[in-house]
Amino acid sequence: MNRRAGLFKSGQCRGLTAEDNWCRVVSLMVSKATINYSMVVESRPSAIVGVCEQILSKLEANGFDKDDIFAVHLALEEAFLNAVKHGNKMDPTKEIKIDYSVGLDKIEISMTDEGEGFEPEAVADPRFGESLYKPGGRGLLLINSYMDVVKFTERGNGLYMVRYKEKPPLAKRGD
Amino acid sequence: MAEIKPRISVEYAEKATIISFTDEKILEESDIKALQDSIMSVVEQTERIKLILDFGNVQFLSSAVLGLLIRLSKRIYEHDGQLKLCNITPKIFEIFKITRLTKTFDIYKDVESAVEDLS
Image (cartoon, rainbow over all chains, first blue to last red; front, side, top):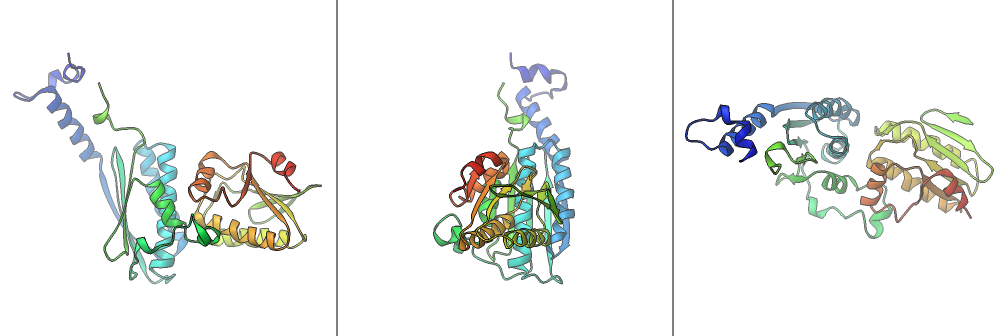
């Protein structure tokens, strides 16, 4: 007998299988647990401290493990510094918009600066040649390495990144 | 053991100078700049310095710290010195691996191993 059917037998709707009910319950849980946040932050490096405290505490509250928290923290630091230095050219009068949502299975973060943008493909790989000996240029590599999805807007002044929880969510576990 | 503010402690041992980072997180630009100034002032005291950096307390760092290490490394090797890193936690070591800086820096398990390998 399907274990899930046994667990939800009492809550089954007429005409729906136990599997359907299981999926309905999980999607309801995920949608209720996903909360969206939005903020606009001053374009100075130290402004990331408060942002990180807020986001990382929500990750912890949502059961993300230490590896996920480390990864997101690093990506946030690198992305924000890039936005301040390269995007907004260290202009403290400019702003950076950060939107994020933390769900049971992932965190999504969007970060947008007021700069002209850039071409991610044009950034030299810091792992090879002369770039290996340069003090800078590693932020993008680290963001790509620690986040599961990384995309830029066409203009290049907006970054979208996702980190999935290391462990698979409840809905995807086998029986 | 001499302590220099901010954020490092310095030990002048027989075979090497050992600098330990005292902060768990090395992040903010101003902090990293201050750290660089502190370390450079120690480096400039000794011609051909044999410097060991102990990361034992460090739980988190950003790529700006890697930049600091590269600048430091250039300064030391230009003056015929040696630089070795040690006591790096697995999570931080992963950052060095991803950026291929494990090829650039001499990294050791602990201070003793680093000292042993000094020429």
